[in-house]
Image (cartoon, rainbow, N blue to C red; front, side, top):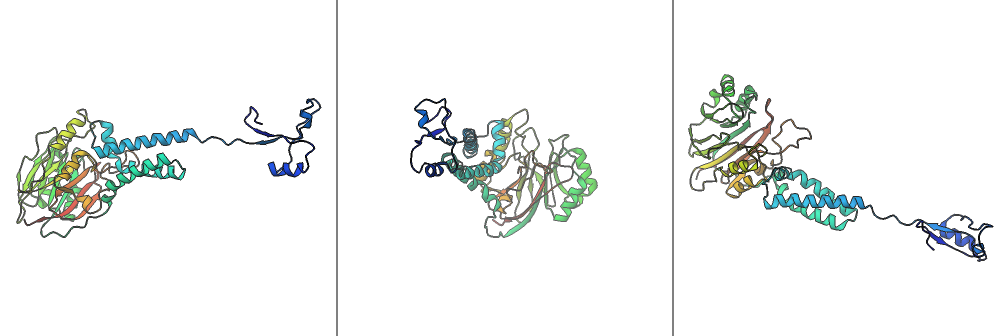
Length: 372
C-alpha cells in the first residue's frame, strides 16, 4: 500500500516461510517490526514494514533556465541573420555575436548531454549556423598573389587627439607606411605629429582637424587631392585621391557616429549607408577607420556584398579585437576598426597593435593595387 507520506509499504504475514530471506532481498537489511500490543487483530498479523523512496522529479528550475537560454539564443541569432539593428540593444547584441555563438553552442551541447533533447538540438543547430558565419574569419582565404603596386596603409583612432604622436610617427617609419588614415584628429594633434616628424615621412595630407572627436585626416607619401566621397555628417570623414604609380586609388578615413550617442542608431545607420560603394569602372576605393560596427552589422555586410572585402578577414585575423585596447572582461573586446578594400585588391598581411593614449588599436595592412 502507499502511505500519505509518499512511501511504499509492503506487508508480509508473520507465518510465511523464508520470510527473513525475502525481507533481506527486499531491502538488504533487517526491517523494523510493525506490531505493538495496541494494534487491532488485523495489524497483529503484520510482521514488518518495507519502505522505498519515491524517485524525485526532475529539476524543473534547471529546465526553465535552459528554455530561457534557448529563447534568448534563437532571438540573438535572428537579429544577426535577419539584419535587425534598429535599437540599441540589438546593436549591442550583434556586436557580441562571436561570444554569443560560443556560449550558446556550449549550452546546447551541455543540454544534449543532460538529455534535454528539444532545447539541446535547437541551440546546437542554431549555433552551427552562427559558427558558419563567424568561424571563417579565423582562416585565411586562398587568393592568388596580385600583380601591381603594393600599398601599406595604417588607420588609427587618436582618442580626441591625446594618443602618443611620437609613437605613431615611429610606427609609420618602422613599418614603411604609405598612407595613414586618422580619426579624432585635433589641431593640437596635428602640431604634435609635425613636431614628431610626420611631414618628413608622409608629406602629403588632407587634414580636417577639429577640436574634440570629430576631426579626420589622411597623410601619404604619394600626392593627394581632396575628394568628398561621403555626405556631410556629424563627424568628419576625410576623403582623398591618392596618385599611386600606375593607378590612382580613393581612400576614406571612416568615422560614423557611434550608435550609442543621443542621436541613436538611426544616425549611425545613415552614415554607414552613406559610405561610397565600390566603383567597378572607376578608381579603386579603400575604406579605412573606426566604423563603430563589426562585420556582423548590416552597415558593413552591405558594403561587403557590394564588392569590398575586409582585410583582416582575408588573412584570417577577422576575430582580433580593436576596441577597447586595454579591456579586461568588460566591456567585451570587439572588432570595430577595419580596412575594407576593393575585392580586386589581394591582401598580403595585416597587423593590429596598441597605441599609447588611445582606446583603439591601430590596424596596418598591406595590399596590392592591380594594374587594370
